[in-house]
Amino acid sequence: MKKIVKRQWINFSIWAVLYILFCIWMENLWLLIGLVVIVDIFLTKFIPWGGWKKAKNPKVREMLEWIDDILFALIAVYIINLFVFQNYQIPTPSLEKSLLVGDYLFVSKLSYGPRVPNTPISFPLVQNTLPLLNCKSYIEWPNWGYKRVKGFGTVKRNDIVVFNFPAGDTIALYEQNPDFYNLVKRDGRTNVLTNKARYGEIMYRPVDKRENYVKRCIGMPGDTLSVVDNQVYIDGRAAVNPENLQFNYYVETDGSVLTEDQFRMLGISKSDRNLVSMYAEAHGYLLSMGFGDNGRISLPVYHLPMTTKSLEMIRKIPTVRQVKIEPDDRGAIYPASVSNYHTGWTRDNFGPIWIPAKGETIRLDEKNLALYNRCIRNYENNTLEVKTDGTVLINGKPETSYTFKYDYYFMMGDNRHNSLDCRAWGFVPEDHVVGKPILVWLSLDKDYGLFKGGIRWNRMFRMVHAN
Image (cartoon, rainbow, N blue to C red; front, top):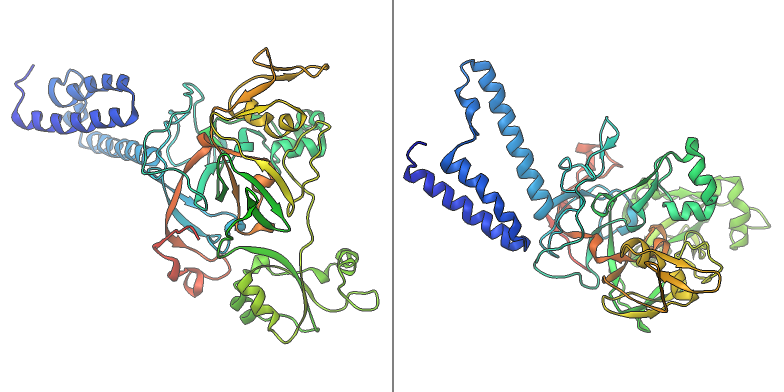
């Protein structure tokens, strides 16, 4: 073995200290075994880590140098993506106008503490499916349990949070919207499981490989939440609404169409400008809401999402005849249960529902089994069986109560009528929380060309605030 020079000791010391601090942060001293590799890289060099540099053929040496750089970059990106921050694009309008479709975000993993990955062997920067190859981007073994290391804080009320989609644990490959459980409720379990031509393979995904969603945290662990006529209540008190809260409205004019300038003033994108009166099949519905004259629809009627500010502006437009909020919806509502227990809840009138908190105990009655069986079975990994005589077995043992292992959160979109959120698929467990959006670094408006208003310059490098 060659003599170890001073520079080698300095490099080794720097990397060893950094690695030891990382092991302490991960709270896993078994990782210290990795020091053996650092010792060999910088000191002993039993393994020829840089052996490619001695290749005599310059072309081979250049190719190996490129491979070495690419591998280093991939490993660096993988570690940063896991433990520091990741990039995220807003794909849907559920948080408009707080976050816009086309916003690109830096999501901080350090805000709530990064999770140790459930599936550590995966391709970096790909959530669950490799492009082009259309196959899994991860290897399911090894699969580690939930562990979150210390961060700068915890989830707080009104935080905008990125999380893994809880109901995305099971998917029908060809039809992923609605989620598997509402799909089964709608079309029947046997049909979904057997009709592979329509639904595709039924697949399971680990927590960290479920799709990323972004919503606002409305309910905290231990809260009792309800929605009454679109107003959220927490423990019986009206919650403070987000500044950019919006709902869907039907707008009838006196015969004039709304102009491009008016739509831009209202902040309504082209994809949201729905002239519903042009569809004959919608006329009966519109007449039942009181639109039209003499039993027919002849005037333009729009279906538009609007904030309170936009609502005030559109009512001042002289050509607008009447404005009505969209009626309540009884569509996909949690729990998507196949039991005989029915809540009667709707999108705009939901709850009251208690949000589970770590260490709290519930009675296992019919209502609680309907509301919390997914938490017990799917999120906290227990077996749950209800016998014909009403006996509840958890992990094979008769139980009359259950104590939760995790904290849970209730997430909703600010665009309340255009958001599939906890009202549709239930609670967000703490182990599904990914991070907190902190910065919009780019924002693209798909309604306009790239150099004709397509870049929203006023949103570039804008901090994301809870409001």
